[in-house]
Image (tube, rainbow, N blue to C red; front, side):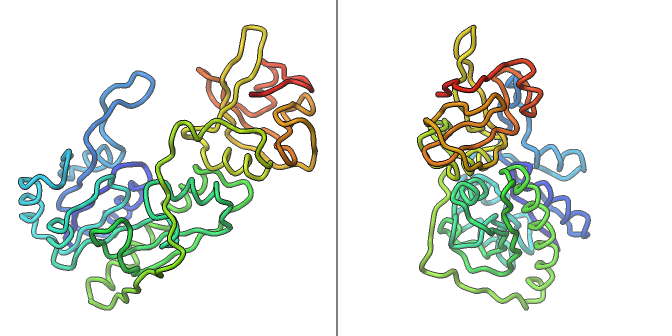
Length: 308
């Protein structure tokens, strides 16, 4: 099929790559404009932009798809369908309806649960046992269109946003490749979303990332895993040189009790409001991620230490 692909982050690269490998003609890739990235904050293209450019696919990076000139350019592509994966803009009706067969989105949740920006993180933080990817026909509402295809993915007790991200990206790529032929033949069954059970996966705010040790250990563990590796759930650790900020990247719940925020041993077992979490992987500010054992070789955290 002759397609346009609209996507921005790493999550969308798997889908674009799969569509190219499946032999679809990608007339143009749309992505968010280059932005400051990395420690040097250099202006760099998005992962999707970089992937497409390396393969000689035309790329456009409009600040707004509502610009009349952009709408006209999109219409001129003479598309059979548009595929959208984590693009980052709300598309107007004129864009959605421009392709002959319409526009389709691969979204990383089981709709109508977790519509919106951060479905992977929110599913882990809420303790959902299962999530998935769904292909839906796009409408003007936020993730409200009828569902065409579904792939379910279980969330394991040690899953982080990173590990779940990778499995969902692969599942979404495979689902798109399997579903587009049915759409082309007019055989795809479109099922309206349920009216009940709607939840919104709002964007992760910086203030959410600080760990509240007074919360139950199961909640703290879910937050740590749901925000790993980015932005990273964090706490303040007292040292001889003052407090340092540390991100917790992986943890496990243990049946121990003590004053909330206190280290219960010298191996990063920390008491919560109910139960405790053992920190398995951490990252000190300005340093790289480390397993707990390597971290403790450089920073002692004896029993009784108070984490804030």
